[in-house]
Length: 467
Image 1 (cartoon, helix red, strand yellow):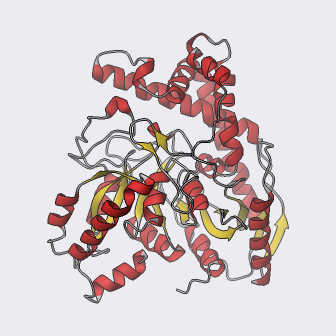
Image 2 (cartoon, one colour):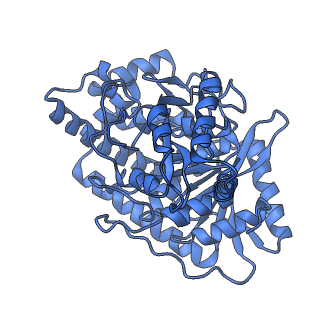
Image 3 (tube, one colour):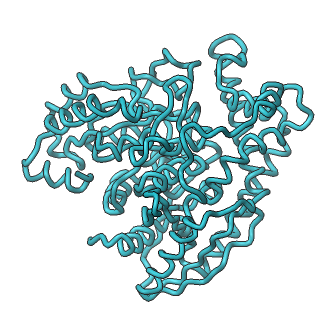
């Protein structure tokens, strides 16, 4: 059952929270070994909590899985999918997870992610590789790959996730799910951190339907007073046919597969048949510069994170403590100057303004979500020679080039998603297409800030969902 169906069953008394938790436990115990989606369980606690009265809550005792990265629940593991934190327990419940609890969800466990969420695949050394239930030889994506795999496998009706560069939308595309990255400032943050990669990273959910996504967004959206980012919703959807720009060109010049283009054009034709005006047009920003600044900000954020960790552990982080990609980002971040960081954030603001102006002409911007089909779980991204270069990042005269080369292959799979993280706009991936090999492809719709309602309305039309 999807979330809406589950909620209706609970409201009608057809099922109890305890029965749903028991069903989740049974499904995880029977099938998780096939996908490695769930990496921690709290079955006894969930069963005990299911005895409570959830009738006055929004979601009535629906079971849910949190992500092993960033979803702190006091007393539960807080590993960030890193061996460095394999024994760490959360000291507090963060505001996003508290909102989940307050809405009447029952947490049954945590899902896999790559270490610190730096990859668009899920293969942490701590927890191992997660496989795509649609095809076990491929990845479900990342960093919310474990969440996507768990939802497709039917472990819970909905899963919590997060998105710092496409980490909800990429798994949605690879696994045939709906994935929203909401407007910056609309989802609870804190209590101790509100910026999340300078606002690029946000928590939300993966779902089976647009209706489920809308239910969740309307239930959890709020301004966090302590946050530097505030949410202002658009007041009304336009009562007219929409003007929608679309593009199949990678903003970093990489190849976009015929299947991704076919998914896009199928959607273009469907939107035209609904009476909307489609224009082949892309916003005028420099995609290469945007990615350069994205890596720069992530490098500095990584360096700041590890400096804080070193202070709390009273020792230096060693190369063997963390995965090599994290090590490279850390040492690149140490070499970024203050003026470069300010310049990068200023460019983010310029691109945000470019997109604001773009949406004065176009209601929506449509692209593929991913440029290629999900890669195989054993795909090799780096040569042995380049791994050696990564291992010697501390002494490299051009650490930025190492970072760019480190992500170049993976970026070619997913060049379209980072834009919305940097500008703060809402972006929604829809499961619209499967090729002859049964590989899934999504399309991404972006709207102006605060315009989730428009995304939901047009997406329900595309997915033939009724209000």
